[in-house]
Figure 1 (cartoon, rainbow, N blue to C red):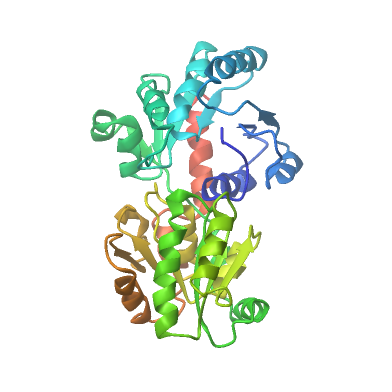
Figure 2 (cartoon, rainbow, N blue to C red; figure 1 turned 135 degrees about the vertical axis):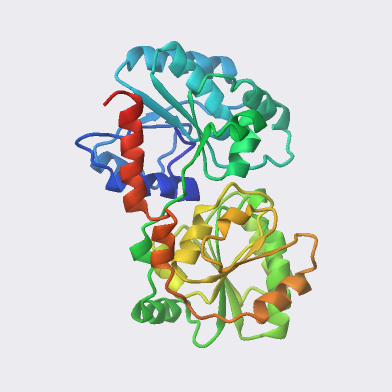
Length: 361
């Protein structure tokens, strides 16, 4: 279960597992909640997966959504595992799965907060409705698990923390790739600060630009590259222009070559307002980058010792000072990530065994 299979962190993690899964034993199908095609849809179907489209989950649409869920599970009695990745809204999917007798029902938390918006009361209701609809509880970190499932389940060791694993070998440093990417970016000998993320409120792009403005003031030979898309991108492009940074900031859109793109960066900047345990931060560490992240993100994100956490209450000047005082060499973190369970190959086998164990396979 996902919203849409675009190139976000969660979706990339799911594809990391799906590509390496033994599909003679386990096949993934995807239930999504958008009509438009996602970036990964074609690949999913080539790998043998099916994609089922449901209505958006939103206030005023609940009755239709619940009806469609019940009809889906009545029609598709073949499913033995439902693994839902839509955070608090997993409660609705797993309630329908429970009614249909699905034996393994996993709710997976990927956030540690919701932020404040007009949907907050409805999202809190969805979290309250979780109850015992799942019978397995997964989270990307213990903080994310406690936020969605509460202290009782977390403290009773009822949560399985499934690492946001990546294809470690794809991110290992390659000087020739770095030269090619920097040539494409026309970076030359500039300091290249990178960011990858959806353009939404959570990612805090406005503050990111404030930080970079101060970096650029002190180091005019710096540039910021941002990959991703989203509804706030036009506003952030306007702000970059207003700050006089248009020539120093590159908006790259959605990229399929994130592993290569990170080779061309010198450090990674990620001042999010909240996260679970962001996949892109694991990827940045797999690429051996120094990372600068907000202290709103769980410390579990620092898998390699290459993440520095800074307060969102600190000034952009304070962030810039830390960035400019850093060294920018790429470290080989591959063995460290493998030993700590962040390699997709080994974690895929673990997940397959887990599914089979819980359905008697």
